Image (cartoon, rainbow, N blue to C red; front, side, top):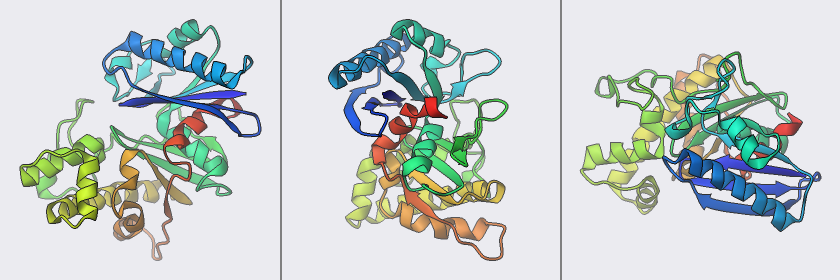
Length: 299
């Protein structure tokens, strides 16, 4: 039996699955933002709740998280949920749960899930993208997530926006200390900020998407800028990795027209004479990351 947890910027999701991939129980609670101890307690409580609901006592625990565990210090690095950075997250969770856990970047978990039985099933290379509170990426080759020497394999959101236009330079300040990171252009908060800069109206990303689908010209223009920037950013991934498929997850993956229009936005920047780019939404939707986390022990 397998339990998977997905620690997001706004919510913590969990799932208990049988060995034959049957979903036994699910759970979801708000993330205790800014509260490290609260996050540990919330995850621990969720694991116990999932196990009790599913009536299981022998299970593995996998956790998808923003950032990754540094192979040098053993602490969390690069998490946009900044309150877990520089913490011994894995050992603290293992103490709270009284069992071993495996952790991986949340975008890696999404990519693993979608490569196993999702949109990328049967393909040799899958690049998974999370567009939500942050902006992350994960790469799976032949069914296995590429972690890399520094445990940052597939990281995408903290590279600069490529082919930047004059009005996009130097770019917004990022929590990582740099400016112009893709996360500052493509995340949900970034979309809201860009819309406000152009219209003077502050709206959440979800409402901007809704307004665009209803024909609002300002919202449509905001999504067009977002699409163009997302296309440029993913073209870099294609030029370096050339994946068989790009799978979108996270709250912004359902933005009006994004999945359908991305291949056309990527294509002009790809270094190939004939471009055939496949982009799909995560087959398992919001559950994709947590399903991948549940499979970490089989990686």
